[in-house]
Length: 501
Image (cartoon, rainbow, N blue to C red; front, side, top):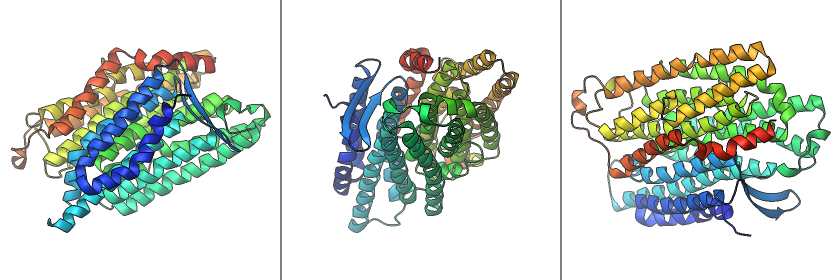
């Protein structure tokens, strides 16, 4: 058996200690090592995707079942975005994290230089583990294996915030850990119940026929609550604005665009694929929760002045779109939810990276009230930020347009198919929240990039190529996926149609 996905997943884990040792010698340049590791792993991932509509690697894992890695129409979009963003941000991290770590020290000496190198080595070793944890979650074919990687996402990200974040990073990282771990424990209870009642933990062998109807409802509730903490649904989102605002910007650009949306993948994989009767029991209420999340997150943006908190609350709203689409009970709507993960991934990564560029070039300014007129000073950053906002607003030809029309069309179709007037009303209300997204997007662009430039920012300029090239790459990818959506939907929609028929 060719070990293609195994390489893609295990190389970053195996080489993480080596990244630390290299970092102790070369410091920030370790980012190039992480880039090569992740680039090779991404190539292996894409190569596996070329093997057919579904590619699986299975290894014995007794007595739990089988340790499997599966790339299909559902997991492929998530896996590709996770590793594409991780690879791109490894380069972006080189100048950003070098500056971030160096500013923590008041003076430079041989001892301080060595401490800086050690911190850079630690950063990239944790970074590789974090990327692998996210990938392992979406490739898993066994519930216990899935949960192990689900937790592996949490541990490196906790230390990345605690060691490299801003502000009260220790308290915030602990809050982030506790909130997301509580959600994971609730999810674990549901996973163990499904495995016990379903006859095993391997996805392919689980049978829901032995699960009593009343238990299925509670399983749906437990899975929803456990995963909606990760998705930062309204009411369970408390940790997100703090964690995303105070995490180092490259990690913010993975937390928001990549990690939290994995909760959506997990919801679809577990409830839609494995326990569809539990999905049917919670879908209507999940759609209401999605609507509330869309509106709440969007309105909260207008109350923020910190540019990273603006983007954090925007992520809450965007998760509402994902939640709403996956509750549509129609394959196009659920597919739109998956596509929304992809479009939010590229668009929000662009915005966090642009915010990081502004913070880096303005000496740490994050207050929108102290910015303005930067379009003429940072033209590349401003252009990429505009593309990022157009993505999340859903303006053609950006990929955000494709995802939004799919999830709203799917929701209307699901409502009409079921004959539910309540679903139809909820979908119409959800559609009216889209101007809120457009409003805060243009409001933020105007305040940051247009108007009068503050005198103290008269000499700022675009950051170095290691920051602008990743920005340009993601901007181009957002447009390409908007023009050629079949890169995402070609295998996704037939799979969902077969499962949800």
